[in-house]
Image (cartoon, rainbow, N blue to C red; front, top):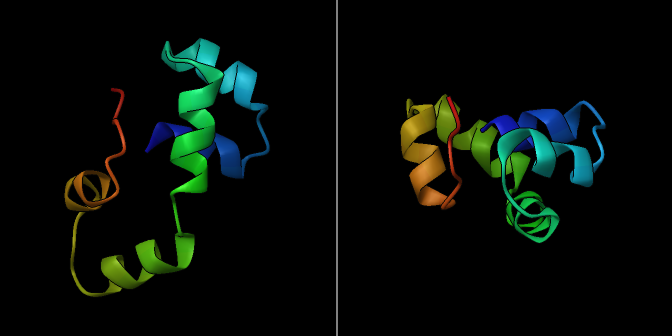
Length: 62
């Protein structure tokens, strides 16, 4: 969820891509496919971040 976190901190997609080692297009795809309201809903239902990442096909970088 690093990509979505950095995006929410207003980092440029190009910078995010460079930091995590992927393309700007993939960063845009992840950001555009992420519905933060739904993520908060899943969290409130007890789902963890690993489940949410898999659900939205988000790559987690450690």
